[in-house]
Length: 149
Image 1 (cartoon, one colour):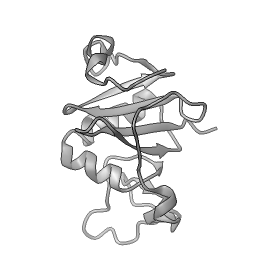
Image 2 (cartoon, rainbow, N blue to C red):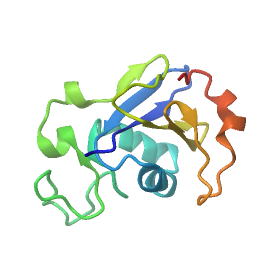
Image 3 (cartoon, one colour):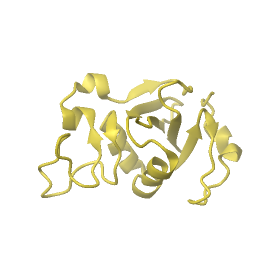
């Protein structure tokens, strides 16, 4: 069974660009990858532009010499995107712009890039990741005004 997640970028106008992640959306995998490998605005933008993901990994794109990357034969440590790697319509898999985030039944975990850092939510409630030494997200929730449970 897949652990699905939503990955969102909080925009300056208060909206969110969201993508769906199908596999391995749990905290100690996805939150760790986001914090360690998508820690700049440019890298977050690159990730969101891929659209919906089957798998998140350390790199959004294959590096030089990794021209074999596809859904069936993925390059090591490279995200698998539904449009780029599986040939699905970009119109159906591109990031969706929404005015607010809500908890839904399909994705228990939600990860939000806002003000230069990642926030994690489980079931619509903020989560603190002790292993990564993050601040209690409940104290910072006011920075993401549109999160609702």
